[in-house]
Image 1: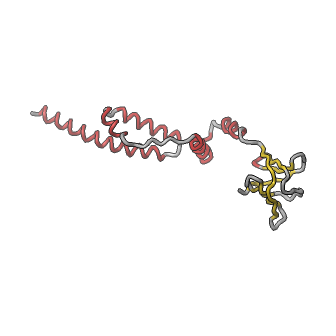
Image 2 (image 1 turned 135 degrees about the vertical axis):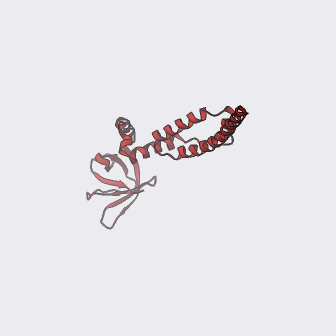
Image 3 (image 1 turned 60 degrees about the vertical axis):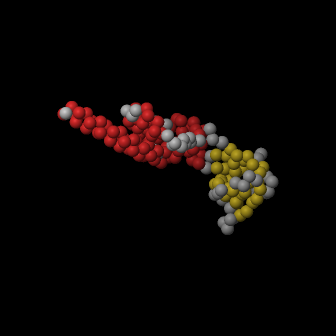
Amino acid sequence: MKFTLIALFAAVTQLVSVSVQAETLAQAMEKCRSVSNSVKRLVCYDQLAQRANNLEDSELAEFYANRPVVVASPDARRNAVNNEVQTAPQNSFGLEQQLAERKSAEASELRSVVGKIEKNPHGKLIITLQDGQVWRQTDSERMSLSVGDSIVISRGLLGAFYLSKQGNNQNIRVKRKS
């Protein structure tokens, strides 16, 4: 009699723990999705997988049934990594070389044609390119530009951009407006 009571108690607690575990597993999955730090998110999913290994195959299949699969695009993953690295300095520790390589892979210059030229109240140029980009002059240098001129916008040091007419060595400092 004692043996059957103990066995019955053990069976009931196992059934209760499996249903509780399945529910907490689903909650843990949602919790892991919301973690923004990729290393912490990976640790969370690893712990989740360890718990899932303890489930029976039928329970696991039931748990994952009818769940949509969401796959992030490569651009979304790259943006997430860039945002994460920018938000906390300790996240970029040791990644300086990869970040420098990624930055150097960006375009070093833009070649286009002037579509429209305006002046702001301070006499500085506002240049709209044919593709719709708007650049505004940030220094007080003078340059004669006209609609249809071929221009080159190149990167400078410390995030500066310089606009020059193609074939001319005179340049002005500009900043992208839109």
